[in-house]
Length: 270
Image (cartoon, rainbow, N blue to C red):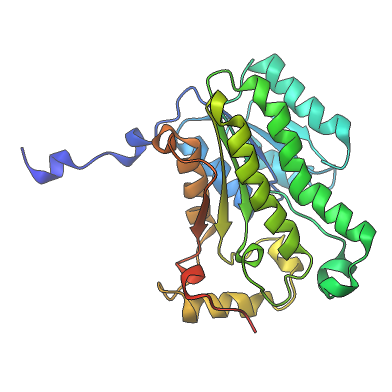
């Protein structure tokens, strides 16, 4: 038998046939959430997708059709009834959930672009509610649907660990999200539910466009990361697929850096 015949088939290795997954946070085809959805679909998972509001629906609906999403619903996490409706639909349609990818974050522009020192109490609460507490709420709603265990994954950024210029209020908010992952992993682990976070490198998305001097972040990554390049949305999407799959059943409470190694050098953007 030759070495070539022993090489594993990556599609078969990550076969998600029969797995039911919810992916929240798709805004358009450039979204990291869409990269996760596309890769999970390629691995034959069944998907439920959401869109923020009527303005976003025309951008998300064609994507949902392209992956044969069984469920497509609005989900503004600032409105309790919409999130409950999504999980209610999953319960009615599938009766269970195997994995969840949470890829949403938001802060009022004035607070995002200003100093943390000047951040308003209202803006801080709003950023925390949408970017962090929504993941906790989703974990609570997913728990009774994950009868056979499952995987919860969210997205973060290096600014949660180190001071990154222009990340401002999102730094402490993402730090809270990463801490929440550890506590949720501890609490849900006995039920076989794994909770992890992907710390993604700088990728050009609609959400990233809200960060001032974002092109500088890309340049810093390309010149200072060990791989001397930035990362792609697809690379983040493949990491989300990996964490959702049965190939990571012993991994929980982890921060997985998908950033071309940028975090290891401790560089700070200036």
